[in-house]
Image 1 (spheres, rainbow over the protein chains, first blue to last red):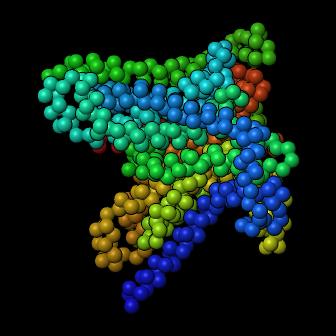
Image 2 (image 1 turned 60 degrees about the vertical axis):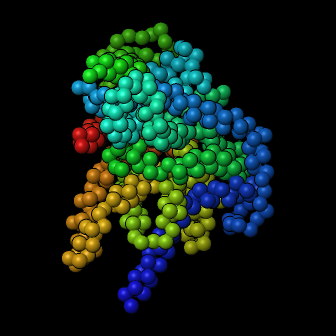
Length: 276
Length: 290
């Protein structure tokens, strides 16, 4: 009897949970479906849910009319390039703070974190003027540097928490065997640190891909990534929902897939290790 | 003992990031502070001069600023209530023995990965458009007049979009915290005959209290800087109905070219964010000790 009742309860809770999850997910699903409609079907009343002529024309048109691939290319270059550069700077810093902490390491970590909490508008004006003077506005180099810098504290923090979990004994043993600093990093630390570095990189790429303050303010066309490309749909002419949906689907699909793989790291990275 | 050598190497390895972050944050912030005391318009760049606190007095007494400050607070607090309250409910639901939890979690977290410009435009058009949006169809089917969301309820509309983006974040973090609750503690509570409410109040809530605090603080920091959602939907309007402080600073700087006034606004935004940041840093700092 008891088992039956708990089973029934379990089914009930499951149905409720699926309904809630479906509602939360629905706008994404709806965007996906709309991307295969003709523009007329997209605004049809009553809405057409599944029974319409599925077409790929929007995907073709988004590329032909507005050169989608150029923006996608910028997004890829920026989110990967900026964070690779960031890793080059962050890995040594996190390594030394985790394994050779000094008196001020904790203060330093907290200070780095505090720079992440500075609102971007606080430095928008000088950065904009500086970029204008240096001709870095709308350049991949300029926006790439900014994306690298806004993620740097997060990179260092996440790497730091991962490195902290590597047992110190192993490093001691390597040192006893006379491994040099370089050897220690290359042969002992790196293999153990790779999973942590990979998940850090994953989260950083997601955040850069979706960054929409600096990308909107510092780029116009040449260096504009997908965030800015989608924003150009905010001033529409004529029917555009299906094309907006196709462009949106293309813009979010890769990151949605990456994001689903990185859920665990997401919790840790976004709370700076405060929730694991 | 290679301590001395390690310490020197350590300093050499840390310094690039410290220098970069210093240049990135402290120097521009100092420049913002400096600009904020100048009469400085890009439309009339030769006519500059020190004006003391005049930019602050004019920015702070500008009715647009008061409106933006109120809008910022309304946006932050409403989204916090919806996303943390809703997120807690979702997390509690997902923490029950449900079938297919992995798939459910993927569906719930998905909106967090959608770029802000996409979320805002999809909601504004596909869902909230008063003529052909899905909500309008639902309203008409139920016999109501469709709501003209972004025209008649601009702030509410922005709040709904931003809440949709952040509820998944709260759900995921709170679910993670809930799942770290001891099985034994759960069993002990049920053996002691704890009812659902006292179980939640005495065992669950204390256990996830810190996670809730962290969610609130982190969301607040991001919500104080909401920009793209407003930029692509309402452009701060109608009037200043959805202009928050970041958008007001953007408008002063890049649309009105008033560097002095925008800088004063930037400094105000920094002070607001720092009030929250101090609390968050304290919690994270405590964690660092452990």
